[in-house]
Image (tube, rainbow, N blue to C red; front, side, top):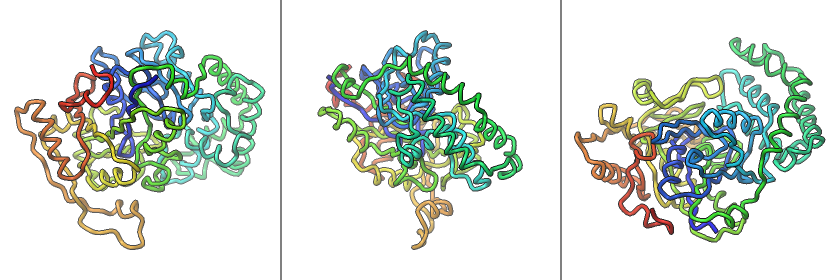
Length: 447
């Protein structure tokens, strides 16, 4: 039986550094399993002290340490993504990645046709993007809500060719009807080729046959388990690795720049309790030491010069779906908003990417408030798009010991929020973390 479960939640819009935190926690707390929740489009980067680097989507970020992963019912999986990620893991020496993976039978499967719809929807918005990764995970979730099991493939159905064929055909009928009148000229001029490619795949019957074969092949590799089995059959600790961030939650995120799924940790707690887990749940929040947004949406402290200095090494490239990467001073207004809407009081905070602050002038910029108030009729998102930040800067002494650096960070944050600081990340690997003095005492299984 699992003893402790640690839930890792991003307090921003994503890109908070969850991958490195999950990897470090799994290493330090001797985790026996990583439980995944969210969507297959997540890209959680991590680097080990042994030199391995990888961006995980559906396998957990402790895979290189031999820790197995479980895709929970609250995970939208991608069979195509599973194939691609498994192929990449083999190149890193993991000969059979599927041995280290199991999946809830009821997981919703996103398909290439959901991906096509996701990309077409964003392209048709022209110069008013909502923001999407363009993988189709959100479309799969929305289709499940609107059409139900008529067009939704579940993980347990992947080995049933007839069911896969029937449901992929249902998806095709829906999307072919929806986009029947669309032409490549209905978007921006630079997007004509992307629209044409997506439409061509949507109406290509050979592509349907390819998807059917791939899905059934992946279905034969997937081991199906329920969360109650994971709770009962594993001991020590588990880490719940969640995708997305609180600011992209479907209901309380910064609309319309949100995901289709719920990202709040309260839904994780509900899932665990309903599956029979009655033990301790520790909720850790993850936040970068500065703001970052990869995709459409407000970031009041965005500064191009600061972005240029902070982002080298973050592996966040510009793409058509998410646009440019923007960074700015840590925004205590957004920080506080995320804490308020999370639905619980976090047990601790993990602050990430602080090494970039140290490497760039040792000056930590913080936005304390905005110059103007929101108008009575405007949404919080609209207000944020015009908000003018007021910032101050915290100097990091040189030299400074790691205990003193932790204390400086802790004292700074305590001026704004009542959340205990548990970890500061000063580098990419599991060895580059500073923990609070009493960190391991809160867990049943210590080092």
